[in-house]
Amino acid sequence: MEKLGRYIGSFARDEEGAAASEYAILVAIICVVVYAAVKVFNLNNIFNTVGQKVVNCVNGTNCS
Image 1 (cartoon, rainbow, N blue to C red):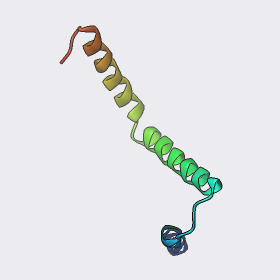
Image 2: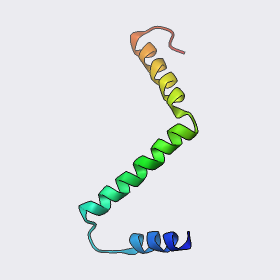
Image 3: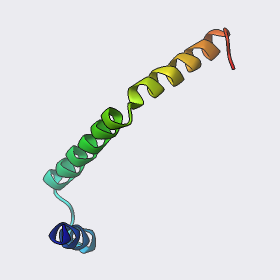
Image 4: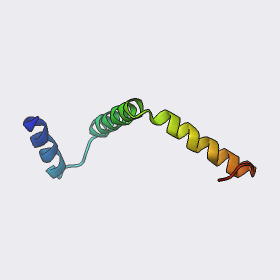
């Protein structure tokens, strides 16, 4: 775990331009974290509920 922290620190301090592959790795990590959060915290139901409320408000029905 300490090695990962050192890697992230050195990655953040690196002043050279980032290559597209580095951005792809960051995007992949972010996607995995978001997917895990949705699954672990059952956020899918929350997104569906909020989405349905937005649709209802746009349609002018049951906007509360």
